[in-house]
Image 1 (cartoon, rainbow over the protein chains, first blue to last red):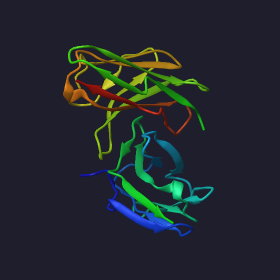
Image 2 (cartoon, rainbow over the protein chains, first blue to last red):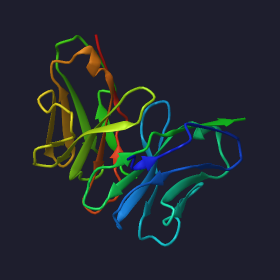
Image 3 (cartoon, rainbow over the protein chains, first blue to last red):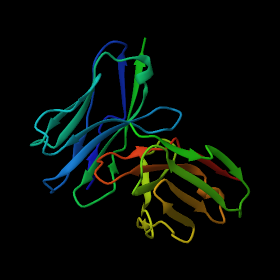
Length: 114
Length: 115
């Protein structure tokens, strides 16, 4: 079974609007971490936001927020006030307790139009 | 955030040659470094995890004799693709983390083309 599922291969949004990128995960651990990374066409992976499984508040970093719903095992990324520079691939990832490695989803390509 | 560099950014080589890729953490001590491979329009696939001073742990299906990983210091890990073949052409990207940090920080990646 996929540990990280991103069901949206592509998303379109107009500049200045908000967009939600979906991510669901599968784990039996109680302690884990969830991450979102942005990959522009240049290829680098840019860390955006982190949510720990025990964090009670949803994580926020500037225009990025993580809508963490533990019971539903979802960790959606919300980008507010989209900018043209937000056009990129976005990857959701999870790290389970006791493991150093990240498991990535298949990604969502976001296109922001003027 | 932390800064990770990777060199070279792009390399073209002939089939049968070996290629070394360097990954450096510039402003923190990386106790653990990771090497990923990414094919076009696909997600990242973890190849191996290396802890400083220890042998790398390879993922299933990754040939350890072909992809040699060295993590000799807290700021440098190298990936050597030995006897490269066209099917090894890919985007290779490293990441680094340190003890107590949750986040992995990624280098800019290396595009390898084997002719």
